[in-house]
Amino acid sequence: MTARDFKASVLWAVIDRPYMGSGLAALSLALGIKAFYSHAGSSELLWILAPSAWLARFVGGIDLAYEPGAGFISHTYRMVVGPACAGVNFLVICFLTLYFCFSLYFPDKVRWLVSSAILSYIAAVAVNGLRIFISAHLWTAEFYVLWITPSQMHRLVGTVVYFVSLLGLYIAVESAMGVRTSRSGPLLWYVGMTLGVPLAGRVIAGGTSGFAEHAAWVLGIVLVLSTLIFLPTALRNRVFWRA
Image 1: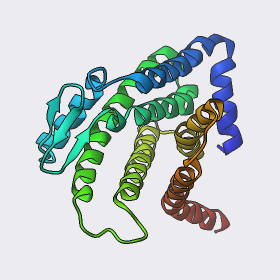
Image 2: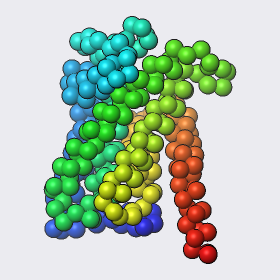
Image 3: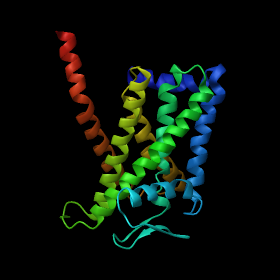
Image 4: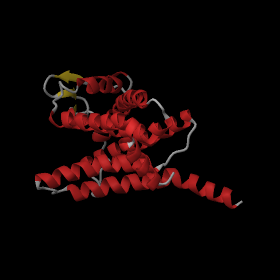
């Protein structure tokens, strides 16, 4: 399946009359969660912050304690896990990727919509706990040099952890279903939701200052990771078909 086939499958999942309701429901749910997240505080996000902090605390040993109004605080690592660290955007990206990339293989679209939401929530909690653990140790590390700052390292780690985890989840579902879909799906959804949607919002608000640097970092990281992960497979397949 090519990138064009992927786009066609997304469009079909939305406009195909028998399944239009579930496709529109998936988009509405994703946009609704993002809208809620943009105004939510730590108390409204406990449904995802609390289990993520629990994993980082009991599995990773990070001393996180809940402070109403702020989030989960670690005094040892001098970090606050608040709304910005909730992993809601990753949850939305996982949900859209799973639903639209695999819905064609499920006659019961509503059941797959619910399954995609559950899988995405579990993945978001687990991955966010891992990201909190890694970020806590990197934030106190003393190896930063002129070409990378702690905040840039934080962004680098977040992008790598989230994108690699998205690919891992995608490949796991693909393997469990025994199908072969477009590997461009996760890349397109990730870039679209992390860069496309925020850029549109900034354009409407009339300000894009600082966005170019962020976009360059994200695009560079995901393209490098995609190449490193999928190029060996593509080369092996090319050699196989030539043989």
